[in-house]
Image (cartoon, rainbow, N blue to C red; front, side):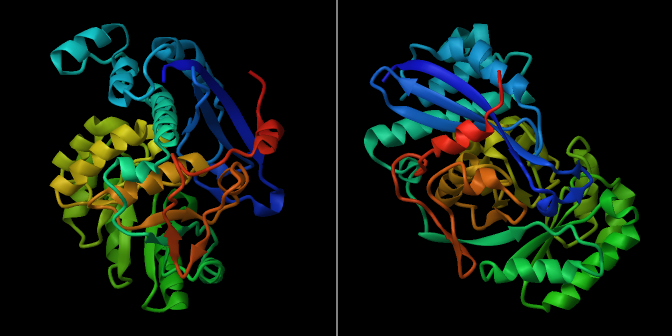
Length: 389
C-alpha cells in the first residue's frame, strides 16, 4: 500500500453567462478546483480536492505545483494507510522526524494558506484509498454515520430586494428544502439594503422556512451589529461571517450583542485556527472547508472541538464533488453535525465531475455507502476542463 504517484490537475469549468452570479467576489465566470490523484504500488487510486479560494473562481496553478513538487516527494514510498503520519510529514516538512518522535508540531512556514489546502487534497485522497482498499465507506472508518439522511439548506441568494423572494422560493422548489441561505454584506452597498432584502425574503417565504444569511466577512463590527438589530424579528437561523475571520475579537463582540447564532470558519486553516475561534467565543457553528482546512483528518479534529464546546458543526460545502462527498462523510459521523450546505449556484464540478449525483429528496441528502468517498471520476469531464501545467 505504498504511494507510487502523486498528481494534481487544475480543473476550470466555464459558467454560461446566463448562469453567472455577482457578489462581493465579483462576477463568477468559472468554477475551479484542484483534482488530486494518488496511486499506490498495487494500483489503488484515490482522489481528493484542494481549493485555492473560498468561492468558485480561482487560479490553481500554485496548488498544483505545491502538491506535485513540494508535498508529493515527501510522501512517495510512504504507506498510504498511515494517514495521520503522512499528515504530520506534510505539516512539519524537514522537521517531521522531530514531530513524530516528540509528539508535538514543528510546522513549516506554510502552516496556513494554500499549503494546508494542498495537504487537505492529499489527505482526502488517502482516505479514499483506505476506503477502497477495505471496501468500506469513509464514514464507517470514522465510526459510522449517525443517520442515513441529513437535512440540507439551499445555498445561494444574490438577487436584489424585488427578486430575492422569488429566487429563494425557486431554490425550495428544486428539492423541497426547508432552509435557504442568502448573501448579504458589501454587495448591497448599505446595511439598510441588506436588511430590506432579508425582510423581503422572510415575507415571501413565510415563518416556517429557515433563513441563513452570509456576509462573507465584509462588514465591520458596527455594521454587523446594526444588521443584526435590523433583522432581529426575522428568526434568522444563523449569521455567517459577519466580520473578517482575522477579527475574532470583533466577531465575538457581534455574537455577544445578538441572539442570532454566528457561523464561521470557511476560510480558516487547521484545528489551531478553530481553537482560536472557539476560545474567543466568536462562533456558535464551525464551518471548515475540507479542501481548505486540512482534509478529512483535520476536519474530524475540528468536529471534536465543536462537540467539546457544545457548538454546531456544518462544513462549508461550496465545492466540487470530492470535497462535497468528503464533507458528507465527516458530518455524518460527527456528534455536532446536523445540516448539509447544497450549492444552488451553477456548479458543474459538483454535478459533472463524477458519475454519481447527490440528489436532494424532501430537503435531505443521503449519505453514500459506496467504498471510499463513494464517487467515480468522469474522465471525459476532466479532459474537457483540465488546464495546462
